[in-house]
Every structure is written in structure tokens, then in C-alpha cells.
Image 1: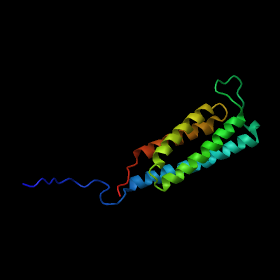
Image 2: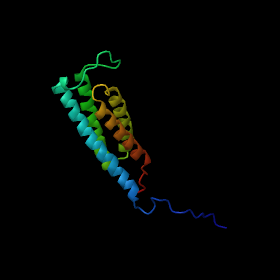
Image 3: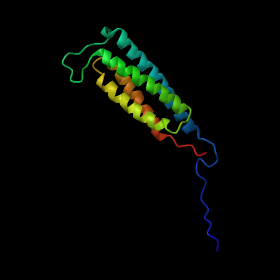
Image 4: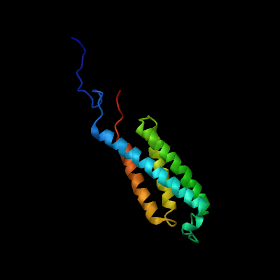
Length: 141
């Protein structure tokens, strides 16, 4: 008696990627690139004209708007680069994207008193990116 077991083919065994997996990848990477660029531009605006943002006296997590500018500039650039890695299907891109989107949520939560509508919008987009990256299936090649 032979010891062969028949297993049903896995979703990725055909070498094709499902439309949902491809759509989530494109969605997450595009949002990461756009949000990263916009966040970097926000950082540049804070560095050049720091008086355009509201200064909130007595805010527990406050530091200089120029400091926030550097945080948003660096974080935005790194998020955009991670978005490029995700769209190129780098294996490390998904994990780095989730970590950076989490850091972006944290930074924008602390930035709410200075620019509330923008911060809440970016938090919502970062949550969507984390969901999309976490739901992706790893391609079987």
C-alpha cells in the first residue's frame, strides 16, 4: 500500500494571484505613497512657516512645531518609500508598512491639537492601510 495523500490545491498553487490580493496591495501601497508625500509636505510647511499651525499652551505632549515638522518629514518620507516597497512586492514591505502606519497613527494622534482634521483623516487612512496589509495573502511562487 502506497503512502500517498491527495491534498486539495492551495489558493496560490496555480501561480495566479487573486484579484482581491492584488487590489489590496495596490490600495495599501498607493495610500502609503500619497499619505507619505503629504505628510512630508506637512513637515516642510511646519519647518518653513511654523506659525501656520496652532500652538496649544499647556498641551501635555507639546514640543516645538519645528520638532513636529521634522517628525512628519522623516516619517512621511519613510512611509512613502515603504509604499514603494509594498507595490514592488518586497517581502519585508508589508511588515514595515504595518509598523510605519502604526507609528504614523501615534504621531498624528499627538498632533491632533495642532491640525485636528488632517490628523484624524491620516489616522483613518493608516488604519485602512494596516487592514489592507494584514489581510494580504503571501504570494506562493
